[in-house]
Length: 352
Image (cartoon, rainbow, N blue to C red):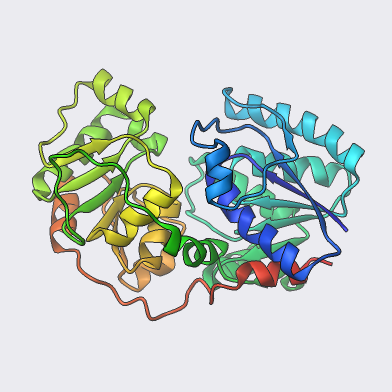
């Protein structure tokens, strides 16, 4: 059985690697062909990235990226359609909510190739987010929908998707966190920053709704500064440039460092006191490591974390950001909203 896996960003490689390992262990009948659309160019995706994380290299790299959402999606559909006609897969496997996800699903649907969607059913109910559009459309194209949570499963049923298509399997990123936890390593930090386990806050800021709005970004840094806590902020060059353009002064308690690799990020998540982020994935990873999360957004796809008190939505209100960082404490991670760490095994066995 041929499975064509389509991914376009570094987090998707990590998710797909978990499922690829499950195919090798449980499904010798599966021939997986991995396609990287090139949506996100990432200098960290060197040979070291694939070797250290034990991730299979893509069989095809389409080199599509750098355009608008419409341009990228259209080009991907064209290239993927030709590739699917050549490879003739029995399944097309897509992950998450990127433009690559939607392009892969649309190209497959037009060729009557069944689509399986990993991370199906996530909803922020914010249609201004391109990711939300990608999720909804992909879910309504897919033949099998692998929901990571009960909330996701209910969202799909509420939208009229047939129950037999929806499979509650847990979250592949929980599988990944268990696999990579022992491989984590401390990143290179400034010599004058002497941190100990649990005495710093990890922060990430990358979402366009925050970085492309000068007032929202100013408010975030005001809240971080007012907290008075030691904050480590791995920052993408694009966000650095925005900060300079807006003339935002970085508070003294915020230590900006270069972007880190996945294993370094795991170390920071495992050793911080709490997390402040606008990333969907990092919200979940904070929970996997038992850390309270202050979410710099007004909404989240991971509503179950808010419900159990592990995640607090603060938007970009400086007072709420500062107060939540000061008050955040250890959380109860005894529940299993994301499964038992065997999601990839379940996925591999369901595909027929």
